[in-house]
Amino acid sequence: MPFLPAPTEKVQNWRPYMRKEQNLEACRPEVEQGDINTSPAREEYWKRNLAGEARMWFEQDARYFLHQSLSSPVLNVITKAEGAWIEDLNGRRYLDMHGNGVHNAGFNHPEIIRAVKNQLDEGLTFCPRRYTNIPAVRLAKKLAEITPGDLCRSLFCPGGTDAVEMALKLARLVTGRYKTISFWDSFHGAGFAAAGVGGQEHFTGGLGPLIPGAFHVEFPNYYRNPWGLTNESDVDAECLRQIELVLRREPDIAAVIGEPVAANPLIPSKGYWRGVKNLCDRYGALLIFDEIIEGLGRTGKMFASEH
Image (cartoon, one colour):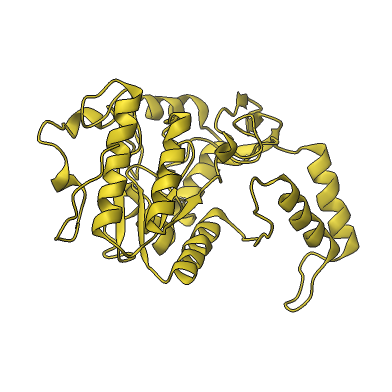
């Protein structure tokens, strides 16, 4: 990849620096979700499947419950779940092909249920500050054994947004910088910092300024990309060029954050992330992998970054 000439101006957004022949419309998906998702097909589904008690709970949900973005109105009322199957009030079973992103072991896994019950029986469901406990230390030790490289300490967070925001916080403290590079169409959580590095307007529209210095670039898409490129190495080179462009023009970049496999889903070449890591090392930035969706065995290795 050729080096870029030293710039003089700051980058406000990478899009003005794209080549003239780049076509943004060509890389947009043909169907997009909205915050409120209704369609003739969905309305027909409700007519056929929501009646009686299910209809009553459906209406009360709409009245009293506030769902995550892109999740309203709900599809149905679920009463049971086991393995990869969920069941509604009328006893109909559905194969859950989504898993909500993180249910790698499936619903109601007997080993997980047994571990939760055992911990409840022990009475230690919360560890007070300034104390430790054996299960937490055992888990941290196990994670140190299975994580790649020299990663050896863990911080447990209640959810993905918290984990991402803590990683960004640590990156600022370690580097003394505050800016970030992340990817368009990515999702890293709904908090201000996590949404700020995310690349979906659904989760940022109307919120005003989130975090300063959050720059976005294109993730490798070998099928549909702004440059009309079809060769894998050419797409990688252009995407890496965008990252280096920001790194060179914005010296305060603390970290590049991304999912090893974009949840769109987009699978980059094996050499792409090596190129990103080399750029991070060259310019003194950290590389943060968000593996909340694809970590813990989902890609065939314990962590997707091991590929």
